[in-house]
Image (cartoon, rainbow, N blue to C red; front, side, top):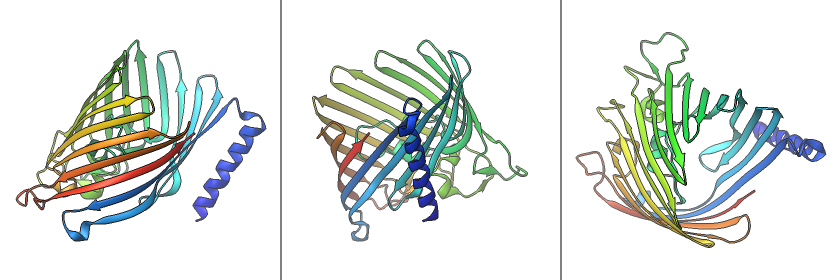
Length: 320
């Protein structure tokens, strides 16, 4: 509770400063999403009927001086993330083509784009929030990022705290098309996987992500394949693939997605998922989204139940 009060006071102070004359230097943004879920699981004990605050987020972006910007993001997710500082980092643009970023942020690994309510499985496997140093070089349509951080997962041979994790991103973007390849020497340090692994391992496992997205007419195509390059846990080299196609018509949107995982039964993900989505803009900043999803679990031999499940999630959100 004390952290919540302090965070709210900090936001209030910065907003007050912005209204008092910093309006040209500080930008306040926010996102609120409430969700209702009905889920019929593999067994009756897995069934869910719930209403939650899925996201309550406040972001502050400050232009400190020429080429120097600061960002702080507060986040609350019911039953998942207590209200706290999620991200806090500085961006220093040293030249027209190079930017140095330092602080707590999501490392540039994986695209994780979607038009649906639920996060893609690639995000569940690969997303990682770290205190990191990132260098970004932009040349025409090409973006190159390199980064280092001290991961929470370490090699048993490491002595003391060490910067043991590195990665690189290569992206090409032009005319509403994006193609990217990401590499990390420590996919075990993702926010999801590390909970299933523990603080130390015999060897760090590398991973990569290849993704492509394209907007053409009213359609959006999203493809991503994310995989470990080495054994992560119990002889498993997990991977996930996402295919998604969306159609936007004025204030309405329709989506279809197919996702497939391999060697992720230990992580609690299904072997495959088919999703149908619908979204509608209700007002300038208010939106409604729904997703019907059907899962197929792994076979009993592969650590699953060999059963299927179905769920429906409805989301009401506002963004400013």
